[in-house]
Structures are given as structure tokens and as C-alpha cells.
Image (tube, rainbow, N blue to C red; front, side, top):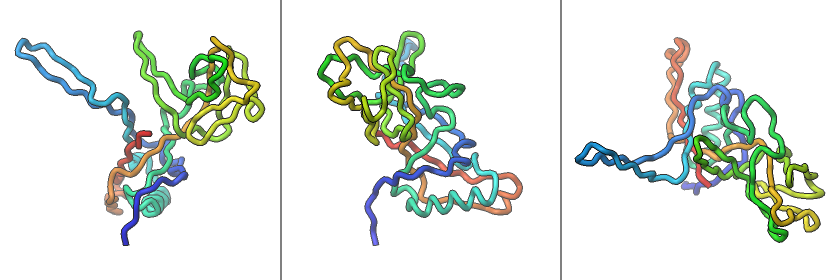
Length: 215
């Protein structure tokens, strides 16, 4: 019996994800001209992250938990949530998020909804990442540096949109900031997990690839 794809709002086993390896991937096309110079073109506007959860497995219990998770997701069929061990918040890993970490936009006195984003800036360039799965209760919001009250002044949707209450809409020119933790929508990038217990006992770990699902 066939089953259609879906998304499960469940988080991959945390202890394993914190020891996993991976990071962002981009797709760049490079053409070398007759002169030897290069023309580089970005085929993807945004990066896409990949991880290998196999590197996070330290015991048979870890392996059993991941295998159960894999079977419940039907391999690649159903997406789920992942905590990136390096990049899971609006601030650097060494500190907790603050309400002025990221700039969401500028008020105009009318706009009430602002999407959560994270900026990655260096050397005058800035890439903006959409945050679509904030951790519930983690979002802090400020208008012109003054923190607002969750519930009374604003609400946050499950897909990362901050909506201000009618009496709290940011006035013209006001900078809207936010701090938060977030998870990443992913799926398994394989329909098969091969485990050799003899090799596992000798320190060889299985490969369990995961790939980000873009919003």
C-alpha cells in the first residue's frame, strides 16, 4: 500500500544530533574562459544544509533509537525537525538570544507581520535566511531596542511570523528586532541504513545522511 509524503513535527534524537557532522552546501557553476579567467554563477540563491547523523551514534541504544525514528518516518518519505549543533539560534553559540540579535524590518505604522530571519554578514555581504521553525517560547522581540511582551504585544506563528497586536504595531521608522532559537526542517537522504554490528563494535559507524527541506 502506497503512502504520500508528509511532515512530522517531531525532533530527531537530540543527543545524536549534537554529535553529528555537517553544514551548509551551495551550488556554484564555474566556467573557465579561454584566457584562463573564471566566470562564476550561483545556481542556488540559498544554501542547503546536509548532515551525517551516523557520526553522532556512540552506542547500540543510540543506534536503536535512530533506527526506530527512521522506520517511523518511512525513510525519505516524511520530513522532521533537526537541531543544528552549530547554528540553532539568532546569537553566537556562546550566548543566549537577545531581542536585538536580528533585524526583521522597519515599521511603517501599518505593517503588523514580520517574518523571522537570520543574517549572515561578512566583508560587506549579507545573506538572509528564512527561519520557519522557531522553538516555541524562545522568541524575544524588540522595537527600537525596547523589548516587547509576548502575548500582550505580539504573537509568533509556528512557521516563524511575528504579528504585533493592533496597539503595538511598530511606528514609522522603528527598527524591529528579534532573538530566538530554531530548528531545521529535514528528511533522511536515504531509504536504507546498513549496519554491521561487528564493524560497529570495532568503531566503524553507519552513514545516516540528512538533508534540509527548503521552505
